[in-house]
Every structure is written in structure tokens, then in C-alpha cells.
Image (cartoon, rainbow, N blue to C red):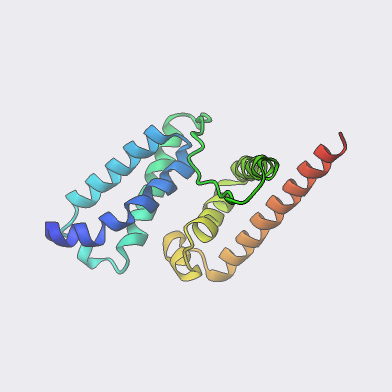
Length: 172
């Protein structure tokens, strides 16, 4: 694979790889380091990349594995989040609605961090990165049915936790 092919096929997925790294590491600098390591490894092995069916799946899997290795090396210390998730705010919303939306957004992100790693990863791939079930199957090695079950359980757990948090807050 030459430089031009590498730029065309690998560089466009750099944003997704960064978001996956940040999902696991919860630290912008660590995620940037992980992304740089993955890009370097891909470049170093560019001659073998033609043998893979999906370079994006390979890159995401490499990113995931590298992040898990980093977490193990840090004794699974909890990293501080930079809160770099995009926030959706309506331009016509009142200040009260904007604050309420921001609070709900922050609560959802906090609850997502409490999900087991596999559920959080699959939920992120499907709902944030908008991967298809087939692409997630390639990335994880799980069957589509397993992915659907894990996704359903993650969403249900998130929904229950969100409802419980809002019901508790409403009591005051």
C-alpha cells in the first residue's frame, strides 16, 4: 500500500478511532497517544493491509485492544473525562430548557460509563458511531443475535438507571 492509498483508506477513519479510544481511556491526551500508536502500527504494516477485508474494522479492533492494554497497565485506574462529547442544543430553546438538556446529557454520559465494558462498547459503536450490526460483528467477533441482545440489555439498563435517577431527583 502506497502513501496515497493509505491516506485515502485509513485517514478518513481517524475521527472514529479517536472517539473509540476516548470512550475507553476517558482522557483526551491518552486517546491521542493511542490513536498515534495505532496509526504508526498501521503504517508500519501497510504492506499486509491489502489482505484484510475491512481496514476500518481492523483499525477499530487495534484501537480497542491497545486501549484495553493501556487500561490494564494503569491497573484500571479511573481516568478523568474531558467531556468532549458533542452536546445537542436547540437554538430556539429557553435557557431553562438548555440547562435541563445539558443536565440530562451529562447524566446519560455518566450512566453510560457505569455500563459493563462490552455493553458500553457495543452501544457506542451502534448508537454513537452508527455502525451496522454486520460491521459490529466484524469488529467484535460476536454474532448479530448476541450483539442485539447485548445492545438491548445496555439500552434497558441505561433506561432504567435514567428513570431511577430522574424519579429520585423529582422527590426533592
